[in-house]
Amino acid sequence: MGLAAAYQALLDGCDVDILEASAEPGGMAAHFDFGGISIERFYHFVCKTDYPTFELLADLGIADKMRWVPTTMGFYNQGKLHPWGDPISLLKLPGVSLISKLRYGLFAFACVHRDRWPELEHKSAKEWITRSCGQEIYDRFWHPLLHFKYYEYADNISAAWIWTRIRRIGKSRKNIMQEQLGYIDGGSKTLVDALLKAIEQRGGRLHLKAPVRHVATENGRVTGVDAFSEHVPADAVISTVPTPLISRMIPDLPPEWRARYEAIHNIGVICVILKLRRSVSPHFWVNISENGVEIPGIIEFSNLRSIGDDAIVYVPYYMPITNPKFSWPDDRLREEAFFCLQRINPALTPEDIVDVKIARLKHGQPVCEPGFAAKIPPVQTPIHGLQIADTCFYYPEDRGIAESVRLGRAMARAIPGVQP
Ligand SMILES: Cc1cc2nc3c(=O)[nH]c(=O)nc-3n(C[C@H](O)[C@H](O)[C@H](O)COP(=O)(O)OP(=O)(O)OC[C@H]3O[C@@H](n4cnc5c(N)ncnc54)[C@H](O)[C@@H]3O)c2cc1C
Image 1 (cartoon, protein in one colour):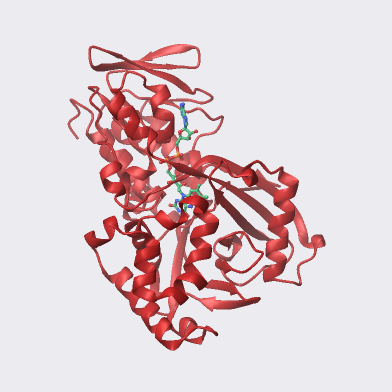
Image 2 (cartoon, rainbow, N blue to C red):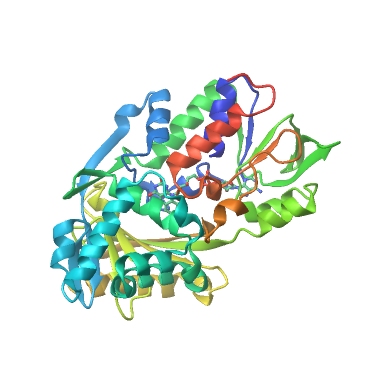
């Protein structure tokens, strides 16, 4: 979001400094070196409705980097891996009544084909799915997914937010039977690098290892930021750091505004990334609902973007960072993640492991409860020249590159005095 805002501000004639806390640019979309392969720390796929991403790729002259792949989903349940994600797979799923399957099919169809659904704003996903599809579908499919992502928040997640997630994936299809997902050739780093190049060409300055400690204001106007060892003067500041960090960084905001940022909760995420000699399954994504397997699913990334001869699998652990598991040492997570993969594919042995890396993020996903829209503060703060947003500001859409790019560019166009 920050890089897209910087790029747009430069296009509109501003002089821009980007202050990034980390040693690497790209935030959640950053890469790491996985034994000679440059790959995302957190899995990234593109959907067919990610229009702001396509527009930015075109602006940067790299539209030809988009790749589209027919992908499939699986569902691991009651000791078996089932195909998933199309009407035939649903009808063939054993142990679920026909009436529940039909209700679920209609529900999925409505999710994909509705463009507005305001009635969902004040409903929880639990209440909505149970009413629409029945208890059987909720218990068998949705409860474990929500529980192993949100834990104590699981019963109070916004139905509107779940709907837009189902819709985004559901619309990314070639036809009703064939899902089609995309990736950027070279990974999200290709986009980050192209943005940085365009920013640099237009005179923008990127400061790495430069955590902003304080946003300075005077007489109700922003005057700059204190980062690393210096003060960077500015007439306008766009903050795209996670909102839980805002209050401490900008104490000059009125108390009622700080309270609004503090009321937004995030969960953390840990991705255990395994390079394996053997594929786990033919699916890109496997949802899991199985006793003793405490993750919502796995992503076999190499079934989307082929990277050499090995399989690359992400095992995501989402949870509130207060959960003791979030502090587990890498070895323990690695062991459990591999155990989960072995449950899905018992032919896997420890000898299949080529390499393992672990990526952790404290602010991995905002928690959007029913009625969340009313909790989001306006992007323009009461301090002149100061705009603030993070990935929850485009709720009910889920956190994603496309929406972050759209909002980042919109914030740049809203800088006072800028004529887009
Ligand atoms: C597990 C996971 C899977 C994902 N999968 C997908 C996917 O498949 N498709 C997709 O489109 N999107 C996906 N995303 C989301 C996507 O990566 C983000 O939406 C996108 O990168 C935009 O993020 P952002 O810039 O809004 O926030 P961030 O990337 O979080 O950027 C915030 C930046 O602020 C910096 N920062 C924090 N504090 C300070 C400070 N005090 N001073 C200066 N800088 C600071 C951080 O270091 C970071 O670089 C995924 C994310 C995760 C975590």
